[in-house]
Image (cartoon, rainbow, N blue to C red; front, side, top):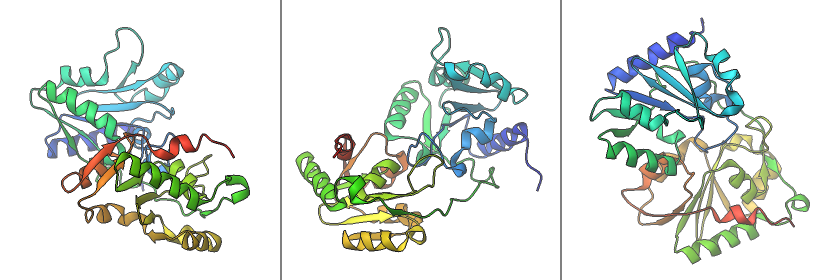
Length: 304
């Protein structure tokens, strides 16, 4: 199959934007877990632009496009963007507009601005929604690449294994107990761990789903009585399966996570600002939230 050029990809995306009455589409460098280093299947910004730097995001309009990145990539950016029709915006340099101000200046009143909520953090969504709303633009959730990036890679099938207590310093049971104590102090009845390092640290598991990172794709849904790990269960080796059983962790398939959230109601849920916005969207009508730091973040800083 012939691989589309960057210009062809942008043209196809713009056709999807037209179908959905969207004037601007933002592609962040992110995955559903707000990871800094991305699985290949979530390198959306790189796919649409050809820019391979670790930091940066793209805004596509119907007649122009821009990529914002920092000083590390002011030389690399123009080289990789050459011929794409995407302009480089030097973030942090005097005179460079913010992407939000640029979108407002280049779109019409009441324009729809779209992002993929599953690859956008709660904190970022709130900031964008407020600023766009104050300027008569509407922020919406739309996965516009779904029908465009048809050769998107599949998630990897690398093993998930136990990180031994000798190296972890604390059992998964003790970590979960400590997190539940913090949940009670905050008044939360449920907590979702979205960040891959938090998931791996909490359960003393490791993997290699992301290059150069000892993590695996997963979510934890934690209540005061139950712990559920959403993961591709076929990746857990025998020791990891036994460890989860001994720790009273219920295993559910990774791709059932959002369907499960639709059944959650009446909970006060602790979410970190860097959880993905689709989690918030899925839960907001039937639950209340406490938006605060993950309790395990400070616990991870204590080395035993």
